[in-house]
Length: 257
Length: 308
Image: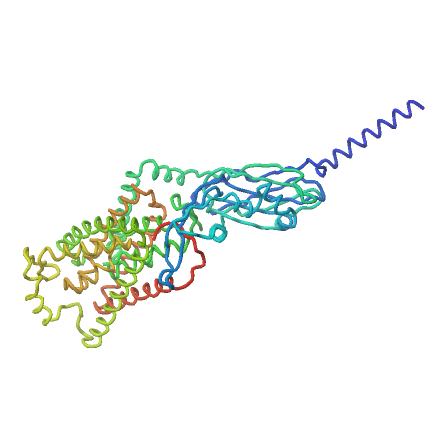
């Protein structure tokens, strides 16, 4: 009887461990994230990249993916009307404490997943960016809300700010997201945040990073222009004159004149 | 096929950029203009930042104008003496213009002045050239209209300009002027070009035709010679001070523009002076209309990167 009981207990223990192993990805606290590739190289024929995010999550939860660069200062010109009908650049406007890149993906619209107060507390979404932003302008008495929205529109047009709800495919504890990484994104390190949400609360989170770096001729020319501008300028002039005269000579030989 | 530009930090279609260069190079060889007033907005339309577009365009104009100058020099169409005097004036005027714009920026409203100067100058030059050429084509279909009219020559000889010192005969152009005239006109064009942020070819060409009375074929070659040096200066200063010259963009543009400039020169030889002028006038007027529309139509975005 005692031996039988020990055998049963052993089977139960093995079954529990097996169940735990099988179901591990779907348990709370098991949020994972893989980013492929997580290193983007800018070469001469670079035109952006396709980045894939995938991982495991607990069934029944929703997901939010946020990709952003460190906050920085951006100086832009603002346009307005002169003499009632002419549109001109009237002055400068500086936006501080906002990332140069901001991407937001989710399984459902953000407002359906988190209350505005939770979004603000977790610093997720445009309203949270708005709250942190600092604007300096030559324009007197400007409408802050309106100009931050204009900033978002400007960034969206440049493909640097992206908001795509319902873009994450999540099924049976596995999620998948394809991102068209914009070629406009400058070299740098970007943070990937993945949040698992349930009943209006953030239950789990993990993060990763994406490194974008230039290489080869692109890196060498960029460094030369920055570090030795006089040599770079002279090189640009000499090559231009040589090509111009070279084409002229070729045309003459070919009977162009 | 896409190419990434290291300074503009953007990716562009290789064939699109080469074609843009070819088109503007064609105009350069045909009319003796650098094409900056067309190329910079076109580059901005394909996503190049304005400052990089203007600086890299100046770099490619060096190649196109070197190619065009060589082609016109072989045809005997470059008045080096006149070109050098205009260049001296242009350099001085350019430096003065840069200071004027700095003062205007400090007091505010510079953008308004720049845009309005641009529209008014382009509009006036284009309209005048268009009607003058149309009139000449209708009146004397067989004669090259750039030839000075006897009545005007007489007036000029007795005018104020002829009483100025340092009278010089410009053999290639077949005109006599005081050396102060091309230098002075160079200064004025240089100031306007600096204020408007362009090379000044489209202003210099009408000045040479209508004020210096130079024949059209010499005007084109001489203008290209002068533009080449102006753009050498601009390229170096932009690369040195602002780091805005994108070498790869300039190479792509100049591959197209040097070929275009050669073809433009060949085509120009087959057209009469007034036909060339009326085509240039139409181009200048088209740019003016585009600028006016850009000024009165509500922009899709109310924020823009820096620059004009």
